[in-house]
Amino acid sequence: MSAGSSSISPGPVNKKATASSPDDDGGVANPMTEEKLPKNFKLVLRYDGTEYHGWQLQRNARTIQGVLEEAIERVLGKKARVHASGRTDAGVHALMQVVHFKAETDTSPDELKTRLNETLPGDIRVLSAEEMPLSFHSRYDVVAKVYRYSILNCRIAGRHRAKSVYVFALRLDVEKMRRAAAYLVGTHDFSSFGVNPGRKVDDPTRTIKRIEMTQQGHYVFIDVEADGFLYKMVRSIVGTLTKVGVGKIEPEDVPGILESRNRCRAGATVPPHGLCLVEVKYAGGKA
Image 1 (cartoon, one colour):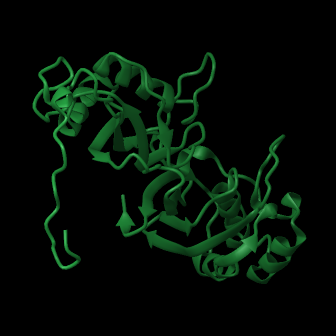
Image 2 (tube, rainbow, N blue to C red; image 1 turned 180 degrees about the horizontal axis):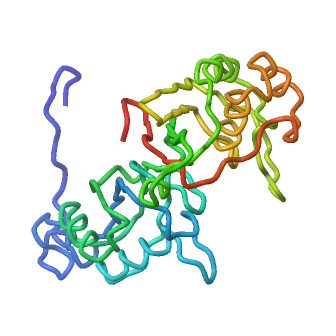
């Protein structure tokens, strides 16, 4: 063949290879010998954490993860390990918790969502289900999460309200709380706000992108967005802000609390039932 020719000679034909055999179906892959890859499902959940001992599996305790994995096994007929964007503590709620799991199944995402909602208790709902690339990870791919802490700032509240808000009787100065919160925005060592009994934290540095406070009548909502959180960090921050709100410390004391890296300098950890995971963000937008 000349250098300028673009034709390619087919070469000699291997007759043995073209002969009919159990492994030769005319160029179509044999489904009996082809390896089947699992599907990677992403679920967006909403749950009321009141009756649960948090997200993570525990022995002899009812958890969100445990109940969800049991439901998946009933629906698909096989076990699956579910991973979440983050672990919520006992009593903490979620409007948007993102989880993923892998399973070999022909079940479609829509069918999975429907059948899980038929199987799960009413306080756990699957809002959406979709198949993702196998590389997707609900926790490691997170770029930011938003938690909201809800306070009912009055002396009396009905039981139905107290289930998802923290009833705080003393009057709060929300403007002073906003001034104090401004010192926490940015990248800092948040050791003073991490409750870590027996837990070793390699790097307590986190970046808080924003803290916003909204006052609606007697309600005060505190939204905290960050690239990550230490254990009970949001609840410790809220405890410190309420301490400012009642005048026990001044907003200008917050930088010193941060720099001390001493948990005893910050406010108390407020109860879990006022906390809710409201948004999980990934590259390109939220879940």
